[in-house]
Picture 1 (cartoon, rainbow, N blue to C red):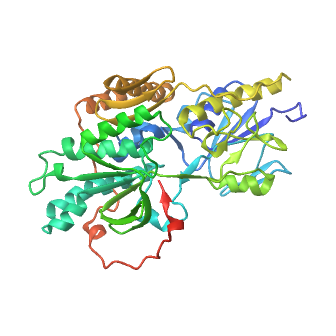
Picture 2: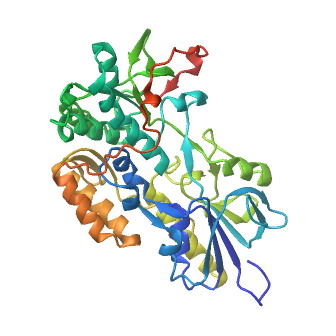
Picture 3: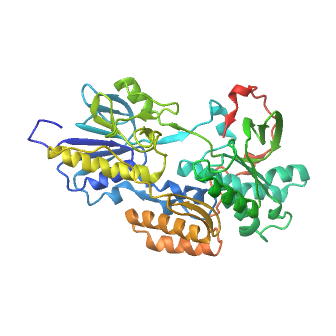
Length: 451
């Protein structure tokens, strides 16, 4: 810490996600001056983002203005800006629209984004789900597909509009597939006159031999069983080799297939934010293959004890000989640990290494169906769904007190209503006019994406 006794140590937190926000909240009344920097003015509860994408809830239901959350934390300043560089020698962060800010302690928690395995041009045709904008674009594509199918007279093109492909069988892919199946087979039933929404095909593609690879095999099997019952077609051991306008090319063993689908969604693979490369360049920090920063047991960067990386951007390999998963509970616990570490440093007390306490993992599959792994017990079905529901409501209300909103959301969920199924953004028909297919660069087997 600084030797200057005339001022409080300056703590700069980059990123207002779970890691950054939980650090800031836990530093309330601590003898430090905190600056929280984020290019968004709100905190996003990402675990429920897929429900925005499928019209169950609105963006404001899972977003909280950072200034509102921290309004009673008088030692914290919030800046709406983007950190673009770092000067460790002078202990400064370089901002896009502000003069450099000095720090005594720097905490970087800027998370991850989509990864298309070197095929970034796929993003245009297969959006991922990390931001509010992503969710609204996915919501637009899903509901616009049914509108376009209603007007289409060509059976082959109509079926392409009613075919939805989700790439990636992790929690996000499973949740999206289950929600779209519910939309097609339940929520929209009877809303159209020319099409049967129940004829929609929902395909979930996974490169491994089962869904939810991090989960125990028995829960993966239950998830697959539930999704199949909901009308989702699951294809494992499937490699995506190309994505273009209205087309997904896959390889299964030696067999190559083309799938015609107007709606393709990406839920496979992540890469670290650009701050990972900045830290590597400026501090010599080591990165893993995904660009995440490999941190020390106390979450600091080697040779830089005053710079810390937490949340999804951090690769913490010091527990169970494998990196911690990129999930919200890890970031929350790391944020709280960071606050305790700083408080103990100020008192000259020793600090133990970070240790993640795994309380379990959850994934919702569809209405009244989920899988839950609590370690000592594994659950699926209705009981697991209630645990999933309670956990998400608990953590959402904990920082934003949105009890009324959550009661309304709960009612809509029980009644299978999707009152937020609005088509916004570029919803004009011009967006969906057929165009001549453009030549796309060929993808060699080495460029295939294992999802």
